[in-house]
Image (tube, rainbow, N blue to C red):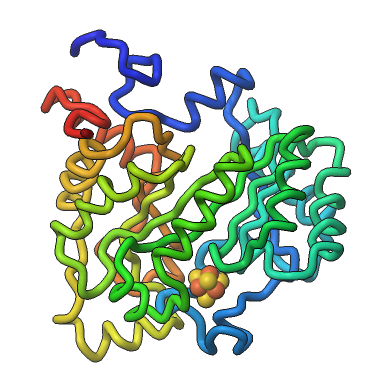
Length: 316
Ligand code: SF4
């Protein structure tokens, strides 16, 4: 193993967001997932009905994250769960995760965010949303919050290709994502993006090319995960009827793909996640059963060491 220091200032082979947090805050920022009661314009008929074909929010939410509890109660329950699991965790961010967390009028949004920020253990907010659910007024408010708290906004881009977005009934284009990201970055917001690798209809070369396309965007962090076929979704029905239309990755293929992807990715973008794992009861395929993010990352990093490669090696 060489001891080269990479552009992000460490010997790790990729720019890890967890490491950037440890440098800045002395520890990782532990996110507490929340369901604030927002819905989604792609479900309520404003943009579409039925939502994105792969979407089942229950598959991505911990048990305490539901509207039967107030936000404060969800935070308390999340704290109890997380401090048992990560005894050294001491910095917490309220993660507005379920559905589209900017999809309401500004006074309602302020009320919900303020409730979370009022909790003594919460040092900031991470907001997951669709790129078509922000406007200049909301972004200005987020910029004010950023001046006083940790604040990040995370946009579901999912794909850089409009044909893929149409095919999964996403209800917005890549240009909409690009515009929301650029407006957020201009206001100095910590801006994150989320993409899915393996949407039906995309070639593996197209998936790889997303690293180059995303590298041109002013994003601070990136979450990537492989397509998972989640139970009780339109995609699960589609997969059952026409599996030949899907080109799903095995874990081995995906780790190789991810290394190629990271090699092409702008080294300034910090990686928040590289793999997804829905709980087994929501997973309709055994292919990825039980994979843990930490062990996947270790494996990828080991392979990168063996290949003597790193994030951004092929970035131009
Ligand atoms: S994935 Fe997000 S945008 Fe799509 S239907 Fe589900 S909540 Fe709405």
